[in-house]
Image 1 (cartoon, one colour):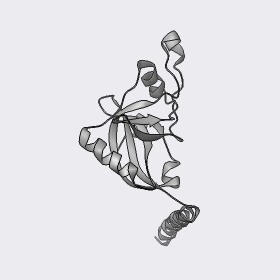
Image 2 (cartoon, one colour):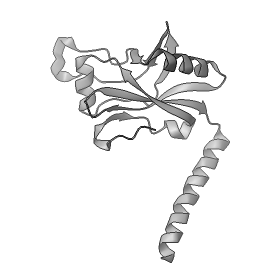
Image 3 (tube, rainbow, N blue to C red):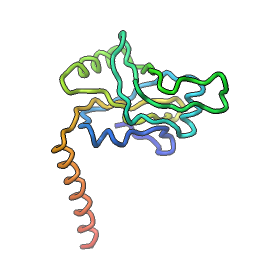
Amino acid sequence: MVDVDPARIAAQNRKARHDYIIESTLEAGIVLTGSEVKSLRQGHGNITESYAVERDGDIVLLNSYIPEYKQAGKFNHETRRPRKLLLNRKEMDKLGGLAQRAGMTLVPLKIYFNPRGIAKVELGIAKGKNKGDKRESEKKRDWERERGRLLRARG
């Protein structure tokens, strides 16, 4: 998991860890236009319902929403266009093979700016949870929270 300063996160998919079991993560670059970068720097963007697929030998992020940057005027971008992810060949082959397995999907967990100011995407290789798994993880999270309270109360 990539450790990122919370102030640098442009968009986050909080729902992903609830809906999926994240098996592993990796960092990828993303091809953006200037108006998309400016919109993300303002903290606008939504990747809750987005996913990544292999298309023509490239990994592409689909259904991500980056609103138009008002000051761009006629040089604005499409809000839901497919965005190419930048990975080396070895990572692409690994992701392509994993995504082909039954029940596996590539889910963006967050879009952030690294210390050099370059936009990156944290991708998770995920398997969907069913309703029972979701309840179980919720019970576990509640118990951890309650256990912490009990331990603090004891001293």
